Length: 545
Ligand code: HEM
Image 1 (cartoon, rainbow, N blue to C red):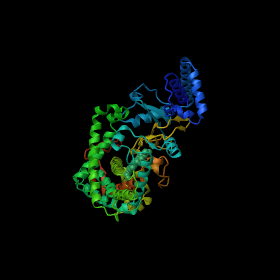
Image 2 (cartoon, rainbow, N blue to C red):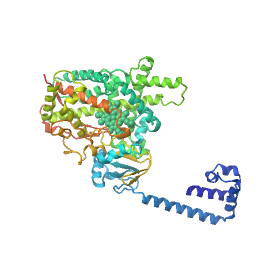
Image 3 (cartoon, protein in one colour):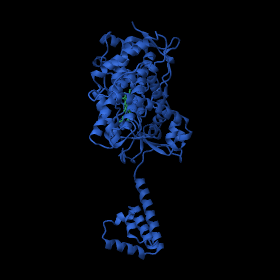
Image 4 (cartoon, protein in one colour):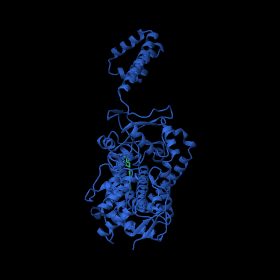
């Protein structure tokens, strides 16, 4: 309003003293909109009034209005209570207090000092951190719309360019998420069809573990291939051989991208995008992404060449048919375009591969570290399932196993800060004002390790999920998949995969540290990338029969 009046007076001055009397030009200025509803007589009177003022009077009025404007703005700000937080330095913000190589830990510590809603400055960028189960739930579920946008940091914009599911907003996100969810459901997420696919993959995985004949090996490669093949079956309609060089490269590149996106230099780039050319990790990362996109484009092309409108082999086929439908009905600018297909595919492959494999690796490592717990898991499996194939239905009869799997996910805490959100509009939350467009970190670490919710938050304790009679209990603060509008799209699939892979492996093998290494020496310190994964280690998978 003030700006408009200012512009109006400025234009009036321009008309009077700049001798710009052309009404047409005035009609195209912002000032015109203020007087648009006025009659020509009223407009002329305003112009006459402005002309009657001397230049110094007008300048004085402008200065006064600007002053009023500034005072009213800062008064407005003073009445809006911002979340507390450590004092920020100009330009650097709180960078000197933040450990960029493990930001979730610094933020967890800061939450103890500043409470459940606080702000920190990553350089000039303000971030509001939400901590603790109640606060995160209240924001993401209770105020789902307001907190439901994705914050797209420079590196994720470079990688996805606003397309796909994970790093998009608005209509693109809505349509791509809806389509992916419904297709994933059609292909059996949470259903029998995918259960058979996972069982088949378990069979290949067990064979590969057997090849090591009880000798110590790193489980990460095989775990990644197995989980990657599940999402591949869903998106492409078929699995890959573990020796397929293209598949190996694609999986390795996903891991590398996840490691690099969480690295300190990339955090620095996100804060100061102007440094782009000096950040070597960015160049490395974009190269890996480009190579994976090229491979995916080839795979899509193969599916296009063999597309049969009567048979949908997977997500890609469904997308291509939907795209064709839009073309046939003359829709231009359809969201079902090549870019959204490629980036949705890349999101599903990336999110579906690393997260589930990492959880599985945490599980096996924790079993080797806590042999007593492994004993109980295997006893229950022997009693309830015996030697037959484990199926999803068994879960309800395996309360101890279920509790162990939940505890692995809780302690593993593999996505410690969720994926950054952004406020979709101005929000009043818990007495604080958070401006539209503010980056928000739902600190999942503080939920999964919430001292008000968990009896022993920092130790591996399956009893967190068992009642006094040994029955499985759900816990509200179990939130590794986040919550609300952006809740993990693959939650159902991931849960089924983790259960079937974990139980099938424990049915077949006893997991132990390598010879000469004690259980105590198995290190639980995570490697920090975009996800938290176990430090490199080897385990022995000793056949049980
Ligand atoms: C143990 C396994 C997994 C964990 C712990 C996990 C966790 C998460 C988390 C924390 C988020 C961010 C939620 C937020 O922004 O608040 C997320 C988002 C997402 N996940 Fe997962 N995830 C897992 C497996 C999967 C799988 C198997 C898929 C593939 C089908 C998948 C696909 C996605 C997608 C597409 C999103 C973006 C959702 C959106 O922005 O709307 N995830 N996941």
